[in-house]
Length: 170
Image (cartoon, rainbow, N blue to C red; front, side, top):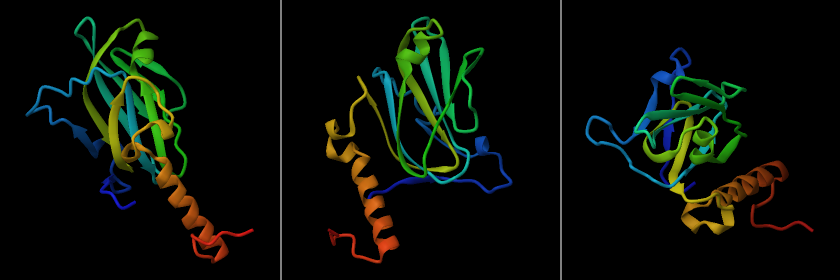
């Protein structure tokens, strides 16, 4: 990648939830206020537990937290926290979380996103919100994850065959 990314990492002895990056800083700002229901993340799985926490406001003005983590395999609701499994593969991943659908499944109506927290350990490239789920090719080039995956594939192919990534075999 030739773009800046944020690496959220912790020492092996530190619990992952103690190291995170949060948008916005809730001490300085009141919230994101994003009304688009699909949260999109481009993150690189680096082989360790990681998670995403999204604070949402519902129609009754009550905050709900959608927590996606790769350390759980079941969905569970505990008070205002909805935990869902996060399945990641090695390398870069495109993660789409439909907040309207998830909150609707527990009888709540999504209004807006107030904050996003990403827990270690991963690399974070982009976070954006959309009105619907889009295929990679439908997104503007800067928001696509496919070019990254193509570059990863070319690099792996050239390493395994010893050939230049631009050389085409027949």
